[in-house]
Length: 467
Figure 1 (cartoon, rainbow, N blue to C red):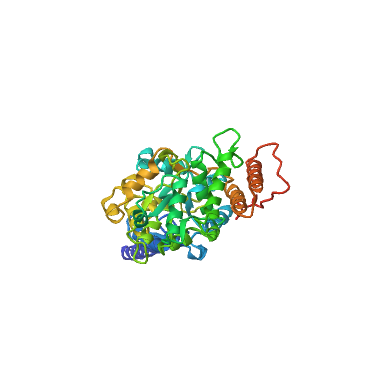
Figure 2: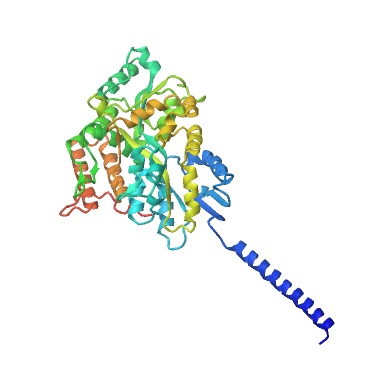
């Protein structure tokens, strides 16, 4: 073969090899672009209706950040119930996703604090203990971290906190030269005085609808009388619904109805109805959550600038007996998530100080980070927050609902018992029977041996935890 021919052949071979290499490289790049990674994913979760607007702003901020590069976050608005106080529908949607063998519909679980034992106990949440060091946890309120744990492992990172508080009309108290009440008796007496004067139609508004809101109300009153619902710290979880303190708690709530201090309609009220009537200047006192403050003092409120906030009063009138039911929401990762690293990046962004500040200013809920109660921007908008922190951090003030995996069924049993016991047509003897039966069913639910359920009591709650 001539030199010229060999040279021509080598040039042809090099050209052919270059084309093959370029084609292979292009195919490789094309295929790699189609492989999903944790930086090219969509995360979905559900929030309560009233939070949708502020969450859309937070999600936009995350997606524009370095932490959110390549991650899309969606709110599943189709799963958000129309009732702003209906959180159980949200829980059921999450449970349905968590139970599935297929990859999760929701990688992020935005969780009410009372769901953690149920979801973690079922093995449905990722253990986050190694992803958040002790240093990472230090600025969170200690109770929030504690209640995000199950069997000493961390499954939920706090986002916003909550505590039951008492709102009062300062202008009406000034009118009769009264200080805010210390005891249940004070609350009844002041209410009746102002009602008799014709200043208000209602003395005290609280949430009496058979829902988790009623549980929170009852838990505060029960604890103030020195009672308890379920104590899981004992070897065989103790139940106190048939003890004298539980009957005293029911008696106080019935007394507000019997004396006309609270309207009978309150038995159908949730947070929204009580807030609307208080804003309409219909009552002296209201039990609610801190996030009601913004609306109560908003332009649409007839009591704007005339309202105070304090811990719930107590049975004894002693400050140490004032109780506030602990609420709050936080983030977990679904055990069947395909995008755990992306979900973790989102949680760290959402629960960090700047995002919690944005949420607190936009929603008026309590943050879960200690420093934000004194943050200049937050205090400029909500001057009562430093005092609010004192309310919830006072020794023994916060009442936690029982952290047991069977919580949905236990709550259902108590809701239905209270629904019967608060009916004024029910006799005292019948109330005792109802609470005794509810205690027995709760003991049976928790696995206590030798418990006989009364034939007269079948709450229908034992499947309440199912999606």
